[in-house]
Length: 267
Image 1 (tube, rainbow, N blue to C red):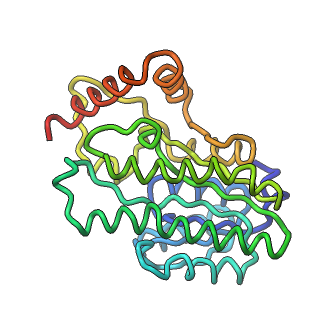
Image 2 (image 1 turned 45 degrees about the vertical axis):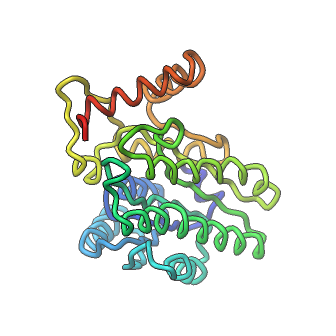
Image 3 (image 1 turned 120 degrees about the vertical axis):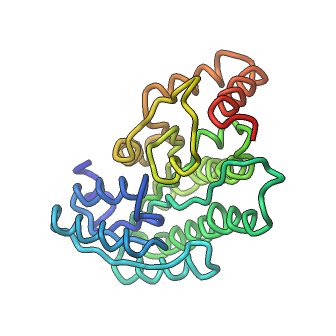
């Protein structure tokens, strides 16, 4: 972790920083000595986290209070990036709902596209373009999900948009290397976050293997530029290997969908 600042400078942007995995990245980066640009719509939680990291790690923070679904969200983040000379970006923000596809409202569909793809794509494009112009190089971490690798029922749109970030990182990984830019996508499994617990999972029949948000952050940053796809948690990596390399894909889908049905019932 000490080499991160040598590679990426003094500042890091965390989009979706206030809680959950975003809080994990903010804390791990601050502990490594990075000053943090926090972008989130939860102003109260973001302010509390900024005070905590400043007090514990003696780092500077810049707060951007905005909904990352906004059309100008990427542009607002880039202003702070340019002002600080930031060269490391982590995009954690995501819109998520666990329900049947036909139960989603049009506003939900718009939110999935806005947060999970539109702002992400614009920010990756503007951030990497800026780094290319300056010639300083940098790093990008996109936080996706194992759901983007094998799409489970009840999270169809979430899985589809998370697959988008995986394909984007895979395509850009080698292309960006020529400009000195590292990019890695983190495919997180089950992480104990406020968003996860709001989905009201049922553990009567099975309980997934949890990974802490700080572990997700530390593993992803450790493998930034080294792996295209980083899967935090040994159990998650073994399960992914089994589902994608050992058994037929149709059987893997059945296992994943059965697990969702056991956890959420017949929604």
